[in-house]
Amino acid sequence: MKELFLKKDMDSVTFIEYVSSFFDEDCIIQLPPIQRNSVWNVIQVKKLWDSILRGFPIGSFLLSERAKGDHSRNILSKEQFISNDSGYFLLDGQQRTRAILMGFKPADNSRPWIDLNPNFYQKYKNY
Image (cartoon, rainbow, N blue to C red; front, side, top):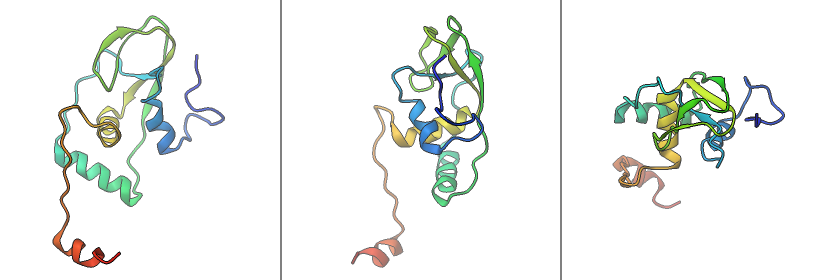
């Protein structure tokens, strides 16, 4: 099995290592077929990103080993397939992971959205 987080224990990985693993061509982390689809709304996504940007804890993610030949789903495309290689299933943390990935790879039909507080502009306009 390809190692997901090289030179580290599975319980100690950085935010960037976790996020990067979803954009790897091997798609090493997949969803088991029993996982439900995304159910978070915009407010929940915004609150998660607020916590991340402020450096607050966002909870843990539970992974389980996945064998070659297991049925799985790609978290980014929702495509179902049979795994060509071993890897990991994401058992807990799907909603948070999807919300995080939206910030790095928006959907094709997404649009930029900027909502600046009017006081923010006044405070930083000369920087």
